[in-house]
Length: 236
Image (cartoon, rainbow, N blue to C red):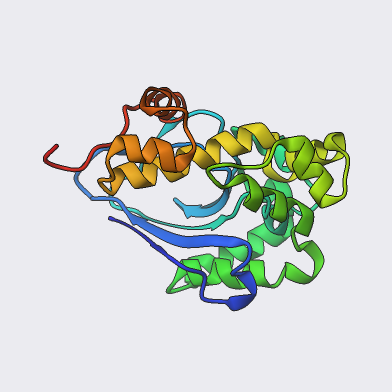
């Protein structure tokens, strides 16, 4: 019922994590568990275009039976492509209509979405048209990549490597991601660990590879960010 695909337009590859589609069964009350991932999504759902800001806690989102939802997910630090001059920190833990950010342009896009046979492709084309004016800041993207590893550099060292002060780095990351470097590091580590655990990797190995002190540390952090225990493969 849920599928992700890479961006088809090469110009978006550095900034778009995926496009996705979710089809909701007609005869069921369904909700989706949304957990922090450092990303910002633009979604087409129930005839509305909405921007889902970066989450700092898990939440259950009720879904309308029998509907299809399409979305495009921007990598951590890349949301300027969508939000323009609005700092992403203003959208932390928020889900707002695109009209709040784009005004009349969003209404025109919604009219196009109503007629489009493939909603995700329209979303891609729209964001591709914003690259020239709203390309994400390379420094922030570099910081997000550096923090997404088992042994990320300390924030002061990262700032020095990028040629900015620690205070300036934090300010830029908060504006572009929605929270500071240390929180982003923890969220990205949680994402790597959750994916590995869901794939059936042994939990002690998951903890080591993701950069946790031990398996107990892993379990506490997964529960903190997802509200759920560490996922285990079926049959275990």
